Image (cartoon, rainbow, N blue to C red; front, side, top):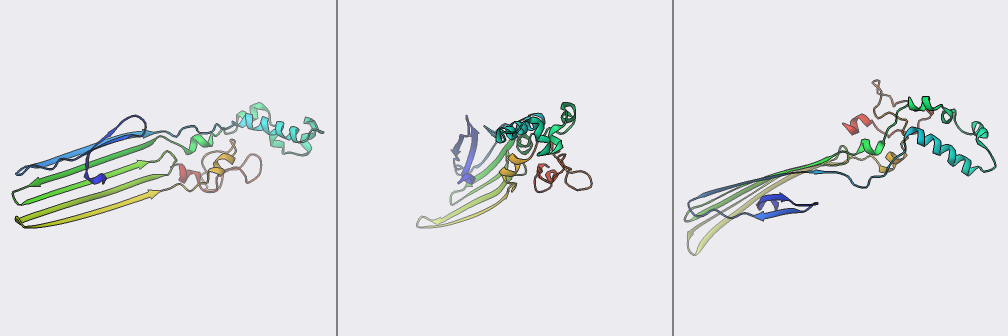
Length: 219
């Protein structure tokens, strides 16, 4: 039970070292506090194309799929957008959607336990507060819990014990499909315009942006 742990430490990788709490000696109150902070990064994320490379490879793919046609024939089949000059392309957004949807994650845990004892009575109280900001934007986990244990032994042959525990957690999960991120085109802006309408796609189509307000997601 994490609530009964008083020492938290971080070793290499994702290994957490846990230590158990020593109970208070008779006539004394023992207080233990522990905390740790850890930063996390998403690993091995796919690289995405910039605007110029996207347009170039799109035209190369089209020629590969239509070997009987040449580059001059493309204008009759694909949008004028793909024939913008290099300077025009450089003036468009160059969004790395994978980079926009990931961030440095943060884990922070605080633990506190208090124990005491007299000749016939003993008690133990422990609590933990945990916060985990995920590496995927708009994802997080929060947890609060505590446990109390109380015992009394008025006679050698009679002992009363009571335990009370409470736990509450909340998980916030980003529901944007990974496929939308990988299909989003680099020449789309990250944020919606001030009017609340979706940013205009330079291709003149509705395709290319995520299906809900990016400003809300990346906040």
